Length: 505
Image (cartoon, rainbow, N blue to C red):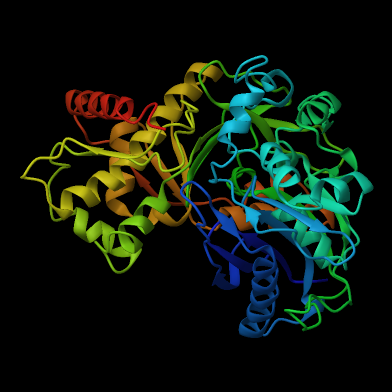
């Protein structure tokens, strides 16, 4: 019997390979960053071949570090940055251009043009999503329009599309399995929520050939095994873990929902990463949002019924702290932001609205841009650092308000995960501004864990979700301490600040 299940966690800024034991604990992890490419204002790209190389490097690195043999790994799950769009040549295996990242706003004009007929909610009834630059569908259309040979190749079936999960699984299986799962497919704006298949009317409206799209599968089934083939010319090593089944696939936020054991309708989690993403399990029927949230797939385990979710997506959370580090030089390491923010007792009247890629939930304004408001001579670096942290908590409050309105469920506590949950100042302020307890699990790597769980279920490493529920444990809880009037005043200031970012472009 194999001892472990592994997960590839391919995120916006780095790729990790994490090995878990049966108790859901981390055995070993290896991580490598990849380049962030900004060719023009609003454009964000990744080199998909570099991501593939980093994936191989971290797989090998983790196995070496942990002295783990291939036969000890029962299965591999994949979780990924969603909506990031790769289009490549089936024969050469090379991308036609850099991957267009989910934060990229170059499709703004295309989305406006598509909205002329039916408005921003033109495809929402079928897909649960508004017309926005965030999703993969418009990005595919942009590539077909602007990259020489892309359109003709797609029509012939020689050019393939995938989000990062599809790209990695295709390469891992020796260029055999061109698949995605329902959660990733639900982020393209091309999949019908009810049929769980590509929607022909939307494909026609966007001019996207069906033959370039991957086959939609469940989140937990065997898609193929790691091939024995050599890899790209830029990464000549043989694939590690040959013969191990690849059998879990979930978009990163849905993977965190699954890893947090949110298996009952009404249970929710918030992930604090590059962006910030709150998902609530709504059961086996999609819930239409009237408050600016996304209706999306939560997960689908094998032949079981699909589980749906409501999602509030925030574009910039941890990325704002990186911006303070890289663009302003206020801190040398992201972890230093808490120390700097603690040099002041409050935000000094400053609000920082990080609408760098427009505003996501609940506004969906791609023409908004970032603003720091309330500046006086009194303000210093500490106030800016504090306002940057508070921005994540305020945005989360807006999403939670919308979620409670849509679902009719009043949240009793919020499960949290992601890199920022070790920031004590942020977590306490989050509990204060929400007025509910905030709970961190004992295994904070819930995104990778969710993908590992899906893979493990497919091969019987774990029996069922009851098995997984037993693994979830509480690490720390923050309870609200703020008086109601302060909470009301701070939030009113935030709401006013947000309006200052509208209609900038």
